Image 1 (tube, helix red, strand yellow):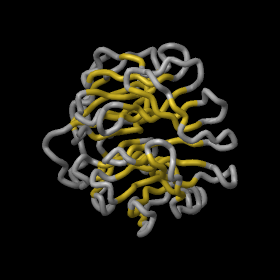
Image 2 (cartoon, helix red, strand yellow; image 1 turned 120 degrees about the horizontal axis):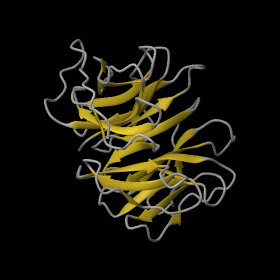
Image 3 (cartoon, one colour; image 1 turned 90 degrees about the vertical axis):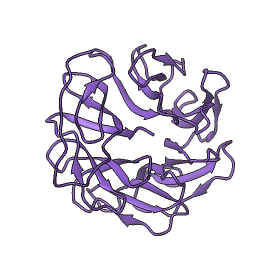
Image 4 (cartoon, helix red, strand yellow; image 1 turned 90 degrees about the horizontal axis):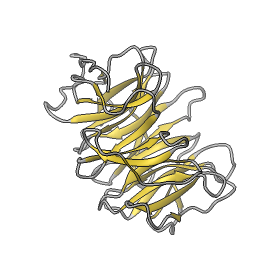
Length: 284
């Protein structure tokens, strides 16, 4: 598995909880691998082996497992493994590209992106790999970055439908009906609902040449820039209590994982590593 790398938090940042874990994607040698660390950045250690490409991790709702994308069989598929990296099992087994899997709050289904009908669409599948269903069925658009609402009734995602060039954010019912566009302009990706379902964080590209972390109410109102520093701030995810937001940023020259309070204050570098660290998730 490789040797552990110890990290440390930035003492000038917020007082992070004394316990908890964050899973993330990192390049420490040659391959994208999954790593885990304490919320303060200490005890960084790999969960997947060098020689395989693994990325896009998310925790199962009870924190006992991790859903992720893996190229171990030659093309990207969705996998599920225990929280310690043991017993990885495929959820999808298709020759097309399947990625960005997220387990539903009740643990029964995985929402993911698949290209099995051509362009990327949002699909759901039972956790045992049965009953795949295409929810978006939009051959002329790219539908990506799906996330469940906390109650499992809706899915938010990014799509370039409309103009075919700029990604906006959309929501739909868990069965693909009730499609609604959120009033996000200028390009947006990587949405994630807050644990109480009241807010959504996302990456905004409304400032040309810049990426910022924004938050809004679930209906799209009250949009606020949280990261507020020119550069690349992206891929936001909530802490389980909704008090913090994880994100990836290049403000230190290379991609690092930061945490900030949910109002954007007190950003802190958690990974503090010279390589590439991104795609993080906080254990529930």
